[in-house]
Amino acid sequence: MSLETPPLSSQPLNRSEEITAESLLKRYAAGERDFRGIQLIGADLSHQDLSGANFRQSNLQNTNFCSATLVGANFREAKLTDVNFNRATLILANLIRADIADGQLVGADLSEAGMRSANLVRANLSEATLREANLNEAVLDYATLQGAVLSEASLSRGRLMATNLSHANLDHANLTSALMNRTVLKHAVLIGAIFTGATLEGADFQSADLSRAKLTSTNLVNANLSLANLRGANLSWSSLRGANLSGATLYRTRLCWSNLSGADLTDAVMINAKLDYTNLRRTDVYGTIMPDGYTMGAKDGA
Image (tube, rainbow, N blue to C red; front, top):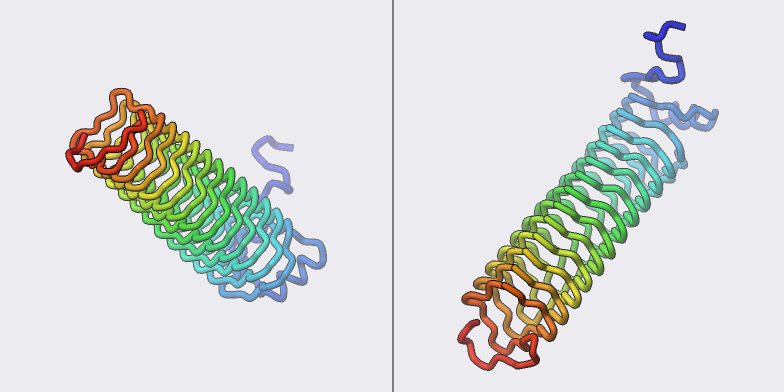
């Protein structure tokens, strides 16, 4: 066999083939799984079981997969704009570099799914499960993940500009070097989450649980951390200029070499916090319990 001729099993099948939903289901029922490159726009495949199907580089825009079972399905580089994956089961699915812009994934189960570099701009993933999913370098600008479960998920170098993650669970998630300006994380669970090197300017962490989170070398300029739990968190070498930390719990929080100039620390609890070389110029500490247990009683700044 010539070395220049790949074996038949590696050659793409069904390239640009237009088929109907009925044809797809018949072929799947007959044992076929390779549907690479097909075009099936606006089809209704709701409640169907298409586990293990290969839709790589297929055009499936506006297709309805509501409540479908798609365990281990391959949607790598597929066109999935405006798709309906509401309540679909996509455990271990391959969505690497898939275009899911404006997609509906409410309540979908994407546990351990591969979603690296996927386009999820404006997608709705409310109440979705993305436990241990790989979203490294994915784009989720303006997406909605309210109440979503992303525990131990990886979003390293991801884009989450103005993304809504309120009430989401990101327990031990990896957000290293993520771009998250104006992201909403109100009441989110972020215990042990990693934000090292992340950009979080103007982000809203009101009442979020960031206990033991790693936020070293992060940009938290003008961020809202009011009433947040930062117990045992590490914010060393970070910028919190103009940040709102009023009422925050900063017990044993590390803020060494960080810039808190112009920040609001009113009524914050900072018992045993580490403030070595911290910049507290023009910081409002009225009612703040300082590391030594002393409560500041006047708005005279630090």
